[in-house]
Image (cartoon, rainbow, N blue to C red):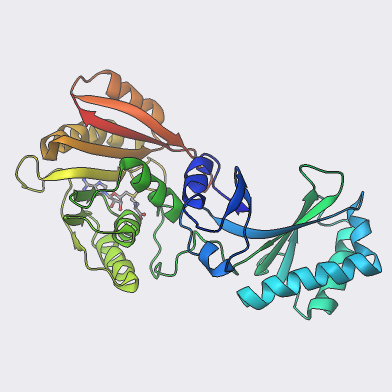
Length: 326
Ligand SMILES: C[S@@+](CC[C@H](N)C(=O)[O-])C[C@H]1O[C@@H](n2cnc3c(N)ncnc32)[C@H](O)[C@@H]1O
């Protein structure tokens, strides 16, 4: 089964439906007889798990000789694929004596160190959704899928890569798009779009020199060439209608930017992006300043806007909007 950020389940499910051998898809649960490697290339989910249920009324039942043998074999197979170097348990009552015993038994049986905080083989135990037993979920990869291999540089306020993927998927992916990513930060939106497939042109700008360098490093690590410039997004000097898709996660007023500054920045941003956007173009905005942004939308008449999603990520609940010119 897959795990998605709350709010992005439909995006993850849509991507799952493109996996040739995924069958019997019910939300993020599915049956899959293919190579697990294919699942590790999913971009809209934060994790992929192998799942197996045991007909036991309580977790203690997993300590039975037969169940423990089966559980070990199940986890070893996942470990052989993922190359995990440690494990951890995630379950309600993780500190209970039964969970402690399960962890001790697995440590011996799997010959892997138990690291309760950082363990790479994440093992979730929970009551079965559609039966009386307990199910065990084992994460296929040592790190979440959202921790992309291309991320060699991180910055405060950096976007979760699965959110960037979702923004691009819902904005629409077109080969002929000229794409602008104002306020590109560490370049998450640029890299994720560059990895999705062809586009006509793409450029990112940020006023912060460190952010520009950070985005360049991430793009290099991803093996993609995209121009990133240290320029104010509101003063690019570019001609009108230069872009078909403008996509941005605006400063949110806590990690990046200030609330007072945003009250000035947001309307100025909408005005300038209106100038830079082509007639049929799309503007996609992700922001945590929901009240401010929705008030500004109500007070203007140049953009149509609709909400794309609200996601829970990193302690925030930002919303994404798709805007088109009236
Ligand atoms: C929320 S962060 C973007 C995060 C980015 N998507 C990432 O994944 O790292 C907002 C960025 O906007 C930049 N910024 C703020 N005002 C700007 C402006 N007027 N022009 C260009 N960049 C600006 C900040 O330097 C910051 O890097």
